[in-house]
Image (cartoon, rainbow, N blue to C red; front, side, top):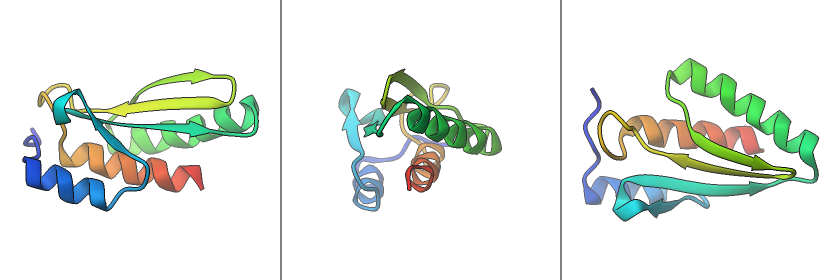
Amino acid sequence: MNPVLSGAERTAALASLSGWTERDGGSSLARDFVFRDFAEAFAFMTRVALAAERLEHHPDWTNRWNRVEITLTTHEAGGLTERDISLAREIDRAAK
């Protein structure tokens, strides 16, 4: 199992990510994405789903028309791990 990141590790990881914020006392990361329309949002979600499958790590997310809200945490570890940071980077690439 991946260990939960320390406070210093979380801070360093957040500094390397754009637009992500800590939530739940540092046990999760979140970011909202806004697209032109539903089709663009859904295409983004498809790219994220494929990346998540490759990493075997899946986001908690919601979609409302052109908006996708994503929260990352490693449930079995009880907080943020390197798996979340890796997936956040993949999500950022998928958003471009």
